[in-house]
Amino acid sequence: ARSLAAEAMAGFARAEAGLRAFDGAALLPARIMMWGYRRLFDRLVVRGFGPPRARPRLTRVEKARMAAFALRLVPLGAR
Image (cartoon, rainbow, N blue to C red):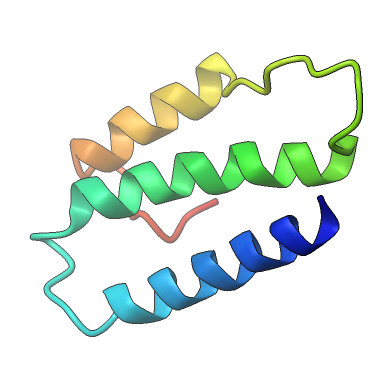
């Protein structure tokens, strides 16, 4: 599980680096989804991959933040 987690972390880093080379406005939906998936992945890493396997979820505040990103009320870089 740890090697898969390391592979996923490297994948996130490659994706973030790759997205910088393209039009940020055109890729806003992809960047917003990556933000949410990254938060879920970070929770999985912190809790571990063994049982029990409770499904990680975004909080209401995080979902609202994603909506604010989509409506351009908050810059996507804000965490």
